[in-house]
Picture 1 (tube, one colour):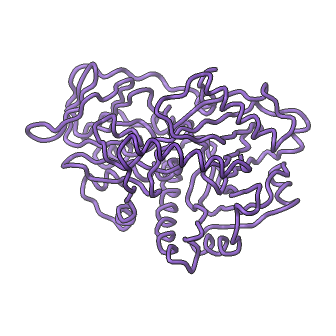
Picture 2: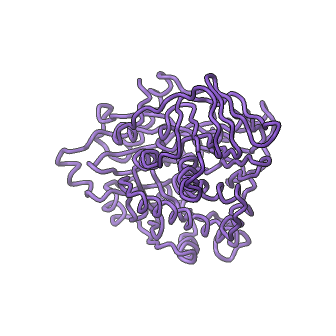
Length: 433
């Protein structure tokens, strides 16, 4: 089975960029060509039009995790029991919501300025559950979300079934007012394709060594070349150890998803409206579901901590999980309806907060979007540049105030603990998958 991302296939691919050869001397080096790195590149090009920027990616720009997620633009997250209005954690939830709203606005500003066509919908999405016990204190949750500017409605029974075309879900909170949906590969591809000439991209150029120069700045080496830069921005998500940063408190989780063919038959035409929708589970191990244009369905219902990329046989097992998840919700879906199946990585932290740091003079890094990479990744790119040039702001202060990713035990103790915890989360959410 080919690990072929449906989002990328539907968006189309950009022309291949060259591999780094020889020595480049630049003002700025960005390592990582996902949403964060590309957002940083746009920020630098606008603020310093005469300075040279190089961006390196170990594979293809705009085809990593940033293009492989489920396309949720997250401004308002569902508050936990300890974050509801009237609890001690509500103040922290307010700060997180300010950051989330700013991140959503940053996405929309990029789309408007660059005239990106990425199927953005501002109609919000649902926090939905099959088992009512997995969505409790609904009134408090609605009050909490409304207090930070979200537009919320509660649905259950027949009205919910009519909205989603399935009786699987028992109750849901629909949350708009900043939350949105998009085609992530079209978004990140648009960010890459619209970069000005002063930003030079090199693909298939993995950094093998990064070290401080004797005078000032940094040298990044690849197998076939090197970049000498005054400032370096690390935007590689959970893979910071690959460039020598071992203690960021971030780790990768592997997820897999499938997209169906267009469901054009009359049954599906009657069941699904043309507007589309999105569903997030209230549990980390639950299911993400979307109705896409052309009445395609997307499902993501596997997540695991792994040391190696999945092989074809393993991906086939996960595709079977996707099929079973779809059949629970929409009887009649068959294996032949699944057109694309792929994997991607999420950059996670123990606390759910990012790693955002000035590592050394001229070296700055960010990681740990924790499943909100479309919006927060876009904002992180701009704020990372702000931090690197010493441009303070209340928003950057909010982000740095929450940037405590949490302690990770050394391997192999963390590997064991993470594997057990994720297996427990998946088991706990079995009814929602």
